[in-house]
Length: 165
Image (cartoon, rainbow, N blue to C red):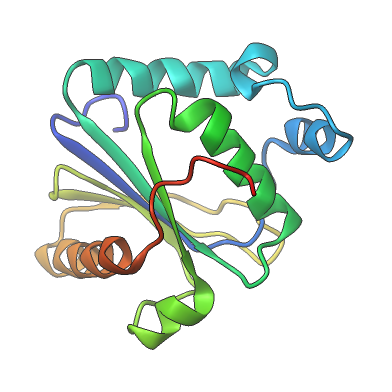
């Protein structure tokens, strides 16, 4: 689905940790600041996919709900955004958990991708950051709720992430 959208791909992230990319995370923790796409095939593939979409005029954006202070993994995500996602053309924003709660945005639960404001990929994670079964829905109520969440998240998020500081 992420290869076939036509206009917009919006991603809302709620997890403080993902049990993925752990080799890259551990390398970063050890001080390796090599851009991920130069060392890790999954990052290179993601960057190429995003570059192809943005070069074709499509929009790829995400908002990450971050704990306060951000977890070490969320700081790693900032690094990957700065060195991989943003240079590929993706817009990456953050919103602190307290702000998300103030505006009525759920800070726990599944992440999702909303594609072309029509198809919703729901991505549940367990407490250890493991991805469960991804589901696809086009239910108008589910899509409308995702659009509502997206608008809130973007309106109240920080500017695009361009630094790990």
